[in-house]
Image (cartoon, rainbow, N blue to C red; front, side, top):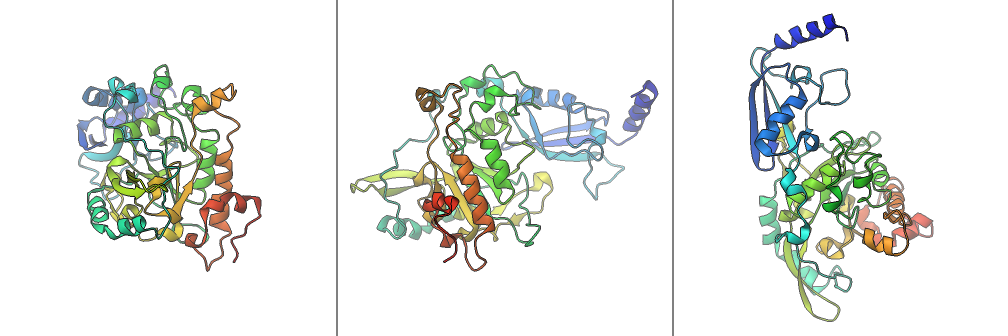
Length: 398
Protein backbone atom coordinates (compact mmCIF):
# COMPACT_ATOMS: atom_id res chain seq x y z
CA UNK A 1 0.00 0.00 0.00
CA UNK A 2 1.37 3.43 -0.97
CA UNK A 3 1.78 6.27 1.51
CA UNK A 4 -1.15 8.11 -0.08
CA UNK A 5 -3.44 5.07 0.18
CA UNK A 6 -2.47 4.57 3.81
CA UNK A 7 -3.27 8.19 4.59
CA UNK A 8 -6.64 7.83 2.88
CA UNK A 9 -7.49 4.74 4.94
CA UNK A 10 -6.34 6.49 8.11
CA UNK A 11 -8.50 9.52 7.37
CA UNK A 12 -11.53 7.37 6.59
CA UNK A 13 -11.06 5.39 9.80
CA UNK A 14 -10.81 8.46 12.00
CA UNK A 15 -14.00 9.90 10.49
CA UNK A 16 -16.00 6.92 11.78
CA UNK A 17 -17.73 6.93 15.18
CA UNK A 18 -15.81 5.58 18.17
CA UNK A 19 -15.91 1.87 18.95
CA UNK A 20 -16.82 0.16 22.22
CA UNK A 21 -15.80 -3.45 22.76
CA UNK A 22 -17.52 -5.71 25.28
CA UNK A 23 -15.66 -8.95 26.00
CA UNK A 24 -17.32 -11.91 27.76
CA UNK A 25 -14.49 -13.55 29.74
CA UNK A 26 -15.71 -16.41 31.91
CA UNK A 27 -18.29 -14.82 34.20
CA UNK A 28 -16.89 -11.32 33.68
CA UNK A 29 -17.76 -8.60 31.19
CA UNK A 30 -14.85 -6.39 30.17
CA UNK A 31 -15.70 -3.11 28.45
CA UNK A 32 -13.25 -1.07 26.39
CA UNK A 33 -15.15 2.14 25.68
CA UNK A 34 -14.77 4.89 23.05
CA UNK A 35 -11.82 3.45 21.17
CA UNK A 36 -10.72 5.17 17.95
CA UNK A 37 -11.70 3.18 14.85
CA UNK A 38 -8.04 3.22 13.82
CA UNK A 39 -7.16 1.04 16.84
CA UNK A 40 -5.69 -2.29 15.77
CA UNK A 41 -6.65 -5.67 17.17
CA UNK A 42 -3.12 -6.04 18.53
CA UNK A 43 -3.58 -2.81 20.48
CA UNK A 44 -6.89 -4.15 21.79
CA UNK A 45 -5.16 -7.34 22.93
CA UNK A 46 -2.65 -5.25 24.87
CA UNK A 47 -5.50 -3.43 26.62
CA UNK A 48 -7.06 -6.79 27.45
CA UNK A 49 -3.72 -8.04 28.77
CA UNK A 50 -3.64 -5.15 31.23
CA UNK A 51 -7.06 -6.20 32.55
CA UNK A 52 -6.73 -10.00 32.46
CA UNK A 53 -3.03 -10.88 32.45
CA UNK A 54 -3.46 -12.91 29.25
CA UNK A 55 -0.62 -12.38 26.78
CA UNK A 56 -1.77 -11.18 23.32
CA UNK A 57 -0.38 -14.34 21.71
CA UNK A 58 -2.70 -16.49 23.84
CA UNK A 59 -5.90 -14.49 23.33
CA UNK A 60 -8.77 -15.80 21.20
CA UNK A 61 -11.47 -13.27 20.28
CA UNK A 62 -14.54 -15.19 19.14
CA UNK A 63 -17.40 -13.41 17.41
CA UNK A 64 -15.62 -10.59 15.58
CA UNK A 65 -15.80 -10.50 11.78
CA UNK A 66 -14.28 -8.31 9.09
CA UNK A 67 -16.81 -6.45 6.96
CA UNK A 68 -15.05 -7.30 3.71
CA UNK A 69 -11.77 -8.48 2.28
CA UNK A 70 -9.83 -10.65 4.76
CA UNK A 71 -11.46 -13.92 5.77
CA UNK A 72 -10.62 -13.53 9.46
CA UNK A 73 -9.66 -10.91 11.98
CA UNK A 74 -5.88 -10.47 12.27
CA UNK A 75 -3.67 -8.49 14.64
CA UNK A 76 -3.35 -5.68 12.10
CA UNK A 77 -7.12 -5.43 11.52
CA UNK A 78 -8.53 -2.07 12.63
CA UNK A 79 -11.72 -1.70 14.59
CA UNK A 80 -13.20 0.42 11.79
CA UNK A 81 -12.91 -2.61 9.49
CA UNK A 82 -15.06 -4.87 11.68
CA UNK A 83 -18.50 -5.90 10.51
CA UNK A 84 -21.21 -3.90 12.30
CA UNK A 85 -24.37 -5.64 13.45
CA UNK A 86 -27.45 -4.71 11.46
CA UNK A 87 -29.66 -2.09 13.03
CA UNK A 88 -26.81 -0.23 14.71
CA UNK A 89 -26.82 3.56 14.84
CA UNK A 90 -24.11 4.75 12.48
CA UNK A 91 -23.90 8.09 14.30
CA UNK A 92 -23.44 6.60 17.78
CA UNK A 93 -20.51 4.64 19.14
CA UNK A 94 -20.31 1.24 17.43
CA UNK A 95 -20.51 -1.66 19.89
CA UNK A 96 -18.94 -5.06 19.22
CA UNK A 97 -19.45 -7.94 21.66
CA UNK A 98 -17.35 -11.09 21.63
CA UNK A 99 -16.10 -13.98 23.76
CA UNK A 100 -12.52 -13.75 25.02
CA UNK A 101 -10.66 -17.00 25.63
CA UNK A 102 -7.19 -17.36 27.06
CA UNK A 103 -5.34 -18.04 30.28
CA UNK A 104 -2.87 -15.88 32.24
CA UNK A 105 0.69 -17.15 32.20
CA UNK A 106 0.77 -17.71 35.94
CA UNK A 107 -2.15 -20.15 35.63
CA UNK A 108 -1.38 -21.97 32.41
CA UNK A 109 1.50 -24.08 33.66
CA UNK A 110 -0.01 -25.28 36.92
CA UNK A 111 0.66 -29.00 37.36
CA UNK A 112 -2.67 -30.87 37.65
CA UNK A 113 -1.23 -32.79 40.60
CA UNK A 114 -1.18 -29.50 42.52
CA UNK A 115 -4.88 -28.89 41.92
CA UNK A 116 -7.44 -29.82 44.56
CA UNK A 117 -10.53 -29.42 42.41
CA UNK A 118 -9.97 -32.21 39.89
CA UNK A 119 -12.51 -35.06 39.77
CA UNK A 120 -11.88 -38.39 41.43
CA UNK A 121 -10.77 -41.22 39.16
CA UNK A 122 -12.70 -44.48 39.41
CA UNK A 123 -11.96 -47.57 37.36
CA UNK A 124 -15.25 -48.13 35.55
CA UNK A 125 -14.50 -51.20 33.49
CA UNK A 126 -16.58 -53.48 35.75
CA UNK A 127 -19.52 -51.17 36.49
CA UNK A 128 -22.98 -52.40 35.55
CA UNK A 129 -24.70 -49.72 33.47
CA UNK A 130 -27.17 -51.88 31.59
CA UNK A 131 -30.32 -50.01 30.63
CA UNK A 132 -33.15 -51.36 32.72
CA UNK A 133 -31.00 -52.28 35.73
CA UNK A 134 -32.31 -51.33 39.15
CA UNK A 135 -29.70 -48.61 39.53
CA UNK A 136 -30.38 -47.17 36.10
CA UNK A 137 -34.14 -47.01 36.70
CA UNK A 138 -33.58 -45.47 40.14
CA UNK A 139 -31.34 -42.74 38.73
CA UNK A 140 -33.70 -42.02 35.85
CA UNK A 141 -36.52 -41.64 38.37
CA UNK A 142 -34.61 -38.99 40.33
CA UNK A 143 -35.50 -36.15 38.03
CA UNK A 144 -34.79 -33.49 40.68
CA UNK A 145 -31.06 -33.69 39.95
CA UNK A 146 -31.66 -33.33 36.23
CA UNK A 147 -34.01 -30.43 36.76
CA UNK A 148 -31.61 -28.71 39.15
CA UNK A 149 -28.58 -28.99 36.89
CA UNK A 150 -30.57 -28.12 33.78
CA UNK A 151 -31.75 -24.91 35.42
CA UNK A 152 -28.25 -23.95 36.59
CA UNK A 153 -26.35 -24.88 33.44
CA UNK A 154 -25.68 -21.94 31.12
CA UNK A 155 -25.01 -22.76 27.49
CA UNK A 156 -23.27 -20.04 25.50
CA UNK A 157 -23.35 -20.70 21.78
CA UNK A 158 -19.99 -20.32 20.01
CA UNK A 159 -21.27 -21.50 16.62
CA UNK A 160 -25.02 -22.07 16.05
CA UNK A 161 -26.46 -25.49 15.08
CA UNK A 162 -26.57 -26.01 11.32
CA UNK A 163 -29.22 -27.20 8.89
CA UNK A 164 -28.47 -30.07 6.53
CA UNK A 165 -28.43 -28.73 2.95
CA UNK A 166 -30.14 -31.88 1.68
CA UNK A 167 -32.89 -32.52 4.25
CA UNK A 168 -33.29 -29.02 5.68
CA UNK A 169 -33.21 -30.55 9.17
CA UNK A 170 -30.68 -29.84 11.90
CA UNK A 171 -27.62 -32.05 11.88
CA UNK A 172 -27.32 -34.75 14.55
CA UNK A 173 -25.27 -34.10 17.68
CA UNK A 174 -21.84 -35.51 18.60
CA UNK A 175 -20.86 -34.93 22.24
CA UNK A 176 -17.11 -35.30 22.72
CA UNK A 177 -15.01 -35.95 25.78
CA UNK A 178 -11.46 -34.56 25.67
CA UNK A 179 -9.01 -36.20 28.09
CA UNK A 180 -7.89 -39.65 26.95
CA UNK A 181 -10.56 -39.63 24.25
CA UNK A 182 -9.20 -36.99 21.86
CA UNK A 183 -5.98 -36.01 23.62
CA UNK A 184 -3.62 -36.61 26.52
CA UNK A 185 -3.03 -33.15 27.93
CA UNK A 186 0.14 -31.98 29.67
CA UNK A 187 0.48 -28.37 30.80
CA UNK A 188 4.23 -28.83 31.25
CA UNK A 189 4.61 -29.70 27.56
CA UNK A 190 3.22 -26.30 26.61
CA UNK A 191 5.72 -24.32 28.68
CA UNK A 192 8.18 -24.06 25.80
CA UNK A 193 5.48 -23.35 23.21
CA UNK A 194 6.36 -19.97 21.73
CA UNK A 195 3.93 -20.06 18.81
CA UNK A 196 1.75 -17.02 18.18
CA UNK A 197 -2.01 -17.20 18.55
CA UNK A 198 -2.38 -17.67 14.78
CA UNK A 199 -0.21 -20.82 14.68
CA UNK A 200 -1.03 -22.50 18.00
CA UNK A 201 -2.45 -25.93 17.23
CA UNK A 202 -1.60 -25.68 13.52
CA UNK A 203 0.21 -28.35 11.53
CA UNK A 204 3.65 -26.94 12.43
CA UNK A 205 2.93 -26.60 16.16
CA UNK A 206 4.62 -29.88 17.11
CA UNK A 207 4.39 -29.28 20.86
CA UNK A 208 0.60 -28.90 20.91
CA UNK A 209 0.07 -31.55 18.25
CA UNK A 210 2.05 -34.06 20.31
CA UNK A 211 -0.74 -33.94 22.90
CA UNK A 212 -3.45 -34.87 20.40
CA UNK A 213 -4.55 -38.41 19.69
CA UNK A 214 -3.33 -39.42 16.21
CA UNK A 215 -5.69 -38.18 13.46
CA UNK A 216 -7.66 -35.99 15.93
CA UNK A 217 -8.05 -33.00 13.63
CA UNK A 218 -8.84 -35.23 10.65
CA UNK A 219 -11.49 -37.03 12.69
CA UNK A 220 -13.15 -33.81 13.87
CA UNK A 221 -13.09 -32.38 10.34
CA UNK A 222 -14.66 -35.60 9.06
CA UNK A 223 -17.30 -35.73 11.80
CA UNK A 224 -18.15 -32.03 11.39
CA UNK A 225 -19.46 -32.73 7.88
CA UNK A 226 -22.32 -34.73 9.37
CA UNK A 227 -22.65 -33.62 13.03
CA UNK A 228 -22.68 -30.53 15.18
CA UNK A 229 -19.90 -30.83 17.75
CA UNK A 230 -20.20 -30.21 21.49
CA UNK A 231 -17.31 -30.66 23.93
CA UNK A 232 -18.08 -31.84 27.47
CA UNK A 233 -15.04 -32.22 29.70
CA UNK A 234 -14.91 -33.51 33.27
CA UNK A 235 -12.55 -30.72 34.36
CA UNK A 236 -12.93 -27.11 35.45
CA UNK A 237 -13.68 -24.37 32.93
CA UNK A 238 -10.15 -22.95 33.21
CA UNK A 239 -8.55 -26.24 32.23
CA UNK A 240 -11.08 -26.76 29.47
CA UNK A 241 -10.33 -23.28 28.13
CA UNK A 242 -6.59 -23.97 28.15
CA UNK A 243 -6.99 -27.19 26.19
CA UNK A 244 -9.32 -25.78 23.52
CA UNK A 245 -7.22 -22.65 23.06
CA UNK A 246 -3.73 -24.11 23.17
CA UNK A 247 -4.56 -27.00 20.85
CA UNK A 248 -6.19 -24.73 18.26
CA UNK A 249 -9.61 -26.39 18.50
CA UNK A 250 -11.55 -23.11 18.70
CA UNK A 251 -10.02 -21.62 15.57
CA UNK A 252 -9.45 -24.72 13.43
CA UNK A 253 -10.49 -24.11 9.78
CA UNK A 254 -11.87 -27.62 9.30
CA UNK A 255 -14.44 -27.77 12.09
CA UNK A 256 -16.31 -25.60 14.59
CA UNK A 257 -17.44 -26.25 18.16
CA UNK A 258 -21.09 -25.42 18.83
CA UNK A 259 -20.64 -24.98 22.60
CA UNK A 260 -18.75 -26.46 25.55
CA UNK A 261 -19.70 -27.81 28.98
CA UNK A 262 -17.45 -28.49 31.98
CA UNK A 263 -17.69 -30.54 35.18
CA UNK A 264 -20.13 -28.08 36.78
CA UNK A 265 -22.86 -29.56 34.54
CA UNK A 266 -22.27 -33.05 35.96
CA UNK A 267 -23.74 -34.58 39.09
CA UNK A 268 -23.06 -37.74 41.09
CA UNK A 269 -25.03 -40.97 41.21
CA UNK A 270 -24.40 -44.36 42.81
CA UNK A 271 -24.00 -47.46 40.63
CA UNK A 272 -23.22 -51.07 41.39
CA UNK A 273 -20.17 -52.98 40.28
CA UNK A 274 -20.74 -56.50 39.05
CA UNK A 275 -19.41 -57.64 42.41
CA UNK A 276 -22.32 -55.81 44.07
CA UNK A 277 -20.16 -53.04 45.55
CA UNK A 278 -21.72 -49.56 45.38
CA UNK A 279 -19.65 -46.81 43.73
CA UNK A 280 -20.35 -43.08 43.61
CA UNK A 281 -19.34 -41.31 40.40
CA UNK A 282 -20.23 -38.37 38.19
CA UNK A 283 -22.28 -38.56 34.99
CA UNK A 284 -22.87 -36.43 31.90
CA UNK A 285 -26.67 -36.41 31.53
CA UNK A 286 -27.49 -35.55 27.93
CA UNK A 287 -30.96 -34.41 29.00
CA UNK A 288 -29.29 -31.17 30.08
CA UNK A 289 -28.55 -30.47 26.42
CA UNK A 290 -31.78 -31.83 25.00
CA UNK A 291 -34.00 -29.72 27.25
CA UNK A 292 -31.68 -26.74 27.67
CA UNK A 293 -32.34 -23.14 26.75
CA UNK A 294 -29.19 -21.53 25.39
CA UNK A 295 -27.98 -18.01 26.08
CA UNK A 296 -26.06 -16.45 23.22
CA UNK A 297 -26.49 -12.72 23.57
CA UNK A 298 -22.74 -12.21 23.39
CA UNK A 299 -22.68 -13.29 19.75
CA UNK A 300 -25.99 -11.68 18.84
CA UNK A 301 -27.75 -15.02 18.28
CA UNK A 302 -31.36 -15.29 19.34
CA UNK A 303 -31.99 -17.35 22.46
CA UNK A 304 -32.82 -20.84 21.26
CA UNK A 305 -33.63 -24.30 22.53
CA UNK A 306 -32.49 -27.68 21.21
CA UNK A 307 -35.71 -29.66 20.66
CA UNK A 308 -34.21 -31.17 17.52
CA UNK A 309 -31.67 -33.17 19.56
CA UNK A 310 -32.60 -36.29 21.52
CA UNK A 311 -31.50 -39.88 21.97
CA UNK A 312 -32.70 -40.45 18.40
CA UNK A 313 -29.87 -38.39 16.88
CA UNK A 314 -27.14 -38.03 19.54
CA UNK A 315 -23.81 -39.83 19.96
CA UNK A 316 -21.68 -39.40 23.09
CA UNK A 317 -18.02 -40.39 22.55
CA UNK A 318 -16.12 -40.99 25.82
CA UNK A 319 -13.43 -43.25 27.23
CA UNK A 320 -15.35 -43.60 30.53
CA UNK A 321 -18.55 -45.63 30.27
CA UNK A 322 -19.76 -44.26 33.58
CA UNK A 323 -20.14 -40.81 32.01
CA UNK A 324 -23.08 -41.96 29.90
CA UNK A 325 -24.66 -44.10 32.60
CA UNK A 326 -28.00 -42.25 32.31
CA UNK A 327 -27.94 -42.44 28.49
CA UNK A 328 -26.28 -45.80 27.74
CA UNK A 329 -27.89 -46.07 24.31
CA UNK A 330 -26.12 -42.91 23.15
CA UNK A 331 -22.70 -43.93 24.46
CA UNK A 332 -19.86 -44.85 22.12
CA UNK A 333 -17.12 -46.25 24.38
CA UNK A 334 -13.60 -45.70 23.10
CA UNK A 335 -10.20 -46.99 24.17
CA UNK A 336 -8.45 -44.58 26.52
CA UNK A 337 -5.46 -42.83 24.94
CA UNK A 338 -2.24 -42.33 26.93
CA UNK A 339 0.91 -41.03 25.26
CA UNK A 340 3.26 -42.55 27.85
CA UNK A 341 1.83 -46.03 27.38
CA UNK A 342 2.33 -45.73 23.63
CA UNK A 343 5.94 -44.67 24.12
CA UNK A 344 6.60 -47.68 26.35
CA UNK A 345 5.43 -49.89 23.48
CA UNK A 346 8.19 -48.48 21.27
CA UNK A 347 6.35 -45.71 19.44
CA UNK A 348 9.25 -43.32 18.97
CA UNK A 349 7.31 -40.16 18.11
CA UNK A 350 5.31 -40.37 21.35
CA UNK A 351 1.95 -40.00 19.62
CA UNK A 352 1.00 -43.64 19.27
CA UNK A 353 0.79 -43.62 15.48
CA UNK A 354 -0.44 -47.21 15.58
CA UNK A 355 -3.63 -45.80 17.14
CA UNK A 356 -6.12 -45.56 14.28
CA UNK A 357 -9.29 -45.82 16.33
CA UNK A 358 -10.36 -42.27 15.47
CA UNK A 359 -10.40 -43.19 11.79
CA UNK A 360 -12.74 -46.09 12.55
CA UNK A 361 -15.05 -43.86 14.59
CA UNK A 362 -15.11 -41.33 11.77
CA UNK A 363 -16.21 -43.98 9.29
CA UNK A 364 -18.86 -45.34 11.69
CA UNK A 365 -20.27 -41.87 12.34
CA UNK A 366 -20.42 -41.20 8.61
CA UNK A 367 -22.30 -44.46 7.99
CA UNK A 368 -24.65 -43.73 10.88
CA UNK A 369 -25.49 -40.30 9.47
CA UNK A 370 -25.80 -41.30 5.83
CA UNK A 371 -26.94 -44.93 5.59
CA UNK A 372 -29.44 -45.33 8.42
CA UNK A 373 -32.89 -46.05 6.88
CA UNK A 374 -35.41 -43.21 7.18
CA UNK A 375 -37.71 -45.28 9.39
CA UNK A 376 -34.92 -45.82 11.98
CA UNK A 377 -33.15 -43.59 14.49
CA UNK A 378 -29.94 -43.87 16.51
CA UNK A 379 -32.04 -45.63 19.18
CA UNK A 380 -32.23 -48.62 16.83
CA UNK A 381 -28.44 -48.99 16.60
CA UNK A 382 -26.26 -50.77 19.15
CA UNK A 383 -23.09 -48.67 19.19
CA UNK A 384 -20.99 -51.42 20.81
CA UNK A 385 -20.93 -53.13 17.40
CA UNK A 386 -19.50 -50.09 15.61
CA UNK A 387 -16.55 -52.11 14.26
CA UNK A 388 -18.95 -54.58 12.64
CA UNK A 389 -20.78 -51.74 10.89
CA UNK A 390 -17.48 -50.34 9.60
CA UNK A 391 -16.29 -53.72 8.35
CA UNK A 392 -19.61 -54.42 6.64
CA UNK A 393 -20.37 -57.57 8.62
CA UNK A 394 -23.35 -55.84 10.21
CA UNK A 395 -26.00 -53.75 8.45
CA UNK A 396 -28.29 -50.96 9.64
CA UNK A 397 -31.12 -52.56 7.71
CA UNK A 398 -33.35 -54.78 9.81
